[in-house]
Length: 595
Image 1 (tube, rainbow, N blue to C red):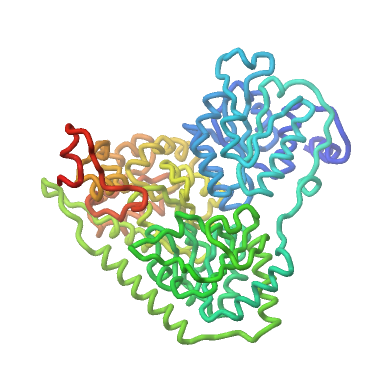
Image 2: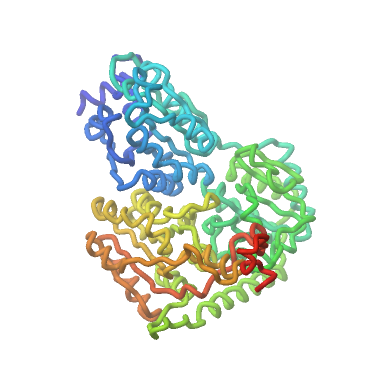
């Protein structure tokens, strides 16, 4: 062991002879990488063989899409860029969806992408694909190792870009470049990438403070940047100084403590009416660490809540995200935490705290109204099956699950009708607890994300909120959770349909259901066959006890909630659909004018 440590230290001071595989692994160690997720393949087996001796754990999944979802969640919880790998060709292309999801989620990640050997490229050989071209639009950079001597240098560049630009980077290496000899000096991260923690231009920070102090009704929107920067305390101090209500950006419910008197909940689809009604009043909006996405600021519940005349101060670490969707009065390019601290200093230097008791009472009233409405909606009984069997109102199931989980639980959520409704029912008092599928909107995210979150934080419970449609895309990873002894809890809401899309067919296609209904097995039985704890729940009164038992288990659990598929949330995008018009006579009966 002492010899190995001496060799590593020597590598950091001077160039020594090593193989390309060794140079890659040593660079990963310098970055603090302790595990890699993927499926083994011959293309990188020389590197794979080194991982146990290096102390890097290899976590095999059942499908490569799951690998990048796992590392997306791991990164969101730890702040450390995750690493994934797969066989060249189909192994890597299986990751397209999950890498695209990480790209839209602004999650740093390195995708080690073995590719066809340089001696066979262009022959359309076995498992050959132009992986660089495929991934270029969904990564911050698609880097290619051009010579075996460059393997460590290009890998360092991959980490540098992933952290600097907040997103996945492809590290493409021809499979024959793992072999050979080179001389390399293993550098430490501080030697090749800089900290991105800066507060932004002084002039912009001054203008932001002055605008906030002149505001009659300032409102803060706190987003993913606040979570990544662990900036909750600074945001909280600004809010208290100004008596400014704080909303969380879409599906980042952990961006501000929900128990704080100024917290109003999340905006966006199926978010908080309290947040939306409060934001409507704003004359100045301080948007911290959020790109103010189009989808995340669309009207919801028929409330067009985003203020059209408000002056916006936007803080984002990426200048490309400033004013992409809403014009701003002040642009601050900087880290959400550092910028918030600088603005707070300026507020304190210019004014005494502004305590507005009436506003605090308004916020408390709005929150109480919304909390009561959430419970009222949840307590509507589910409609029984035709044969009289009970069904649970999905909102009731969400409410009971939210009450049953302890403080500190990490909640991952998929995309879909029930998963999106969950946006209103789960609240958090610390960051890195809410991991949602976000705006790429792909199914199959929540469960592998829960596995990745549990790897990142083994000491807290992790639950996944997922519909039966999305569950069909991820249930194979129960085997991974069992194999890796990770006691994550899948809350599968079985409404026997693709209900987000079914709602569109209800509202726009006169209840003509094409491809909407799902016939599936008893998922609890399937889970038990895979070695997990599996329970089917048909009565809301049973949820608390079943959740308590699952939380006490030292193995994965799959809880199947039989919920009503007719109690549906509003369409995701009312603006994106139109009532059908049919011009050919054979389709005339489908024209909405003939209904």
